[in-house]
Length: 498
Image 1 (spheres, rainbow, N blue to C red):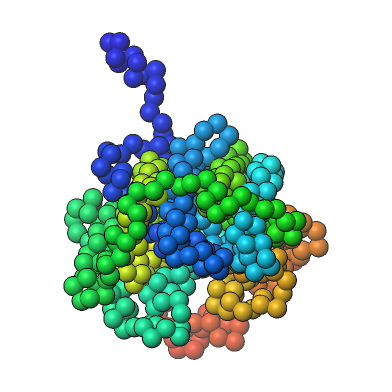
Image 2 (spheres, rainbow, N blue to C red; image 1 turned 45 degrees about the vertical axis):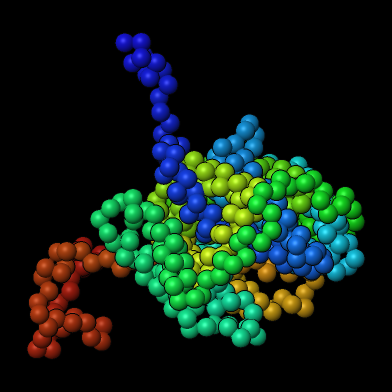
């Protein structure tokens, strides 16, 4: 009886993200999350380190540091401590949003030490403003969140494309048909495994397809594991391994703009994953998630890493696998920490061909888009301007993704904000939602040709009396022989004498 009472005193959480998984299952799905975002998390340190002139032998240290801090940030975001962490299945890692700004700081003479100093100060400012930023959640109705989620998926498709073809159009193996074939093979394996009757195999289809795709690549000579054991086996991130940070006002201001972009994107990712998992989020929970982002970003430079944010592609993985547990993602955070401590394991994962990642990315990113469309299907479009809000915002968000040069002659701060399709779509959707749905003064009842047409309704008793061949011509209802069919009003007109 006492055991029964004890269980009754502590009811199980009803939040879908709190589902407990067996340890082995959690780590299998965690590894799947790591593989999904691995290419994205190692790209920024490679780009920034190379630009800063860091020797090739030290680039591995920078990459390991980013993996290590990404794991710690993921644990903070998923498990949480008071006031920090959304406790949602969100994977954290180095944000690509700041790469252009960091390169600008390096090229202006600040070096990597200037980058670290700017990240620390800007992130601390972001930590202070995070609770105020969370207040905008009331300006994220389905017409806004649907746009943002859809744009997240669409803006990630070019990432999958670059994984498949390669990022350098001048490279001799750019868009190699073999690479495209590997991506197609990986995609086919995902479809086959998703179709099988076993639910576990279906949910692990992404991970298993990546393994199969890699083995296939090895068999045809398109995977290289020769450099796996080049470098240290174990290495703990050394604080300030590249020197103490330096502080420059211009760099801090430009990095603060990046922080605002990260706050916008993380807010969008929190709302997106909440929509997918069926979780409830409020201002306090969003603020806790943003604080986790900013605290992780402020601490990262101490261990030679950069700004941290939620990875949008992993939101798609949650949608595909239907595994909503934050503990599966937390297990992925542990995997990232281990990879950061054992660079040899990171080099094994790095050897997975990008074409394999691209094949999996098509499913993952497409699922995010589909989730956004599902949200937009809930929006009411009659008698309002929601249709033009959706149309303009999605197009505005996709614009920098299909033409990366569209803002190339604008100031750097402008490019940082609007070269992100997610930020562009979010800003446009929020502004238009305010203009058309909050500040309604001056908006007519039938506002414009962009407003959706009202739904046409015909009562069943009307259809019942129609005969084959009846049609509407010249303002009259006629039958199959062209004879006019009388149409009577339900109520007689006033003054008819009846």
